[in-house]
Image (cartoon, rainbow, N blue to C red; front, side, top):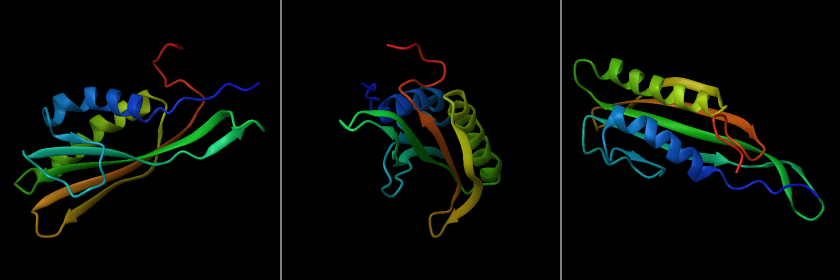
Amino acid sequence: MADVTDNPYMKVFDRWAAAMEPVVGKGNLSMSRSKTLMNSEKYARIFPLGNPALSTALGGEECATSLSFQVDSFARDDYDAQDTVFAIDAASHDCMVGMGFRRTYGAELLTDEGDNVQRVTSRYSRTYTGQLLGEGKA
């Protein structure tokens, strides 16, 4: 019988948040796709894009899934916002690669109209079989 993989979304978010909090500040992170509520000059969010099964058993057990996440980094539009938003993205990238993800899209610089906010979007994906890189098997 195949092992059932756990749902790793919260494990990814917890590790990412721990790495990003020193960069953007406490409370300036989310796992929501909703409109960004920036309370400071820097903000970052991560959200899942899907988790399709790659290998399953007839009984419904999953042996491997394909995880994908989008990470958005934000900085207010001041004299160095573009440098700041790319620095936030770089810190996020290091964390995601450290968990075994590879960037599949980005880093793309976007401007949110009317908010004077710079945004960089990156997407990541990896095959997941129950363990993130750097994590001991439970």
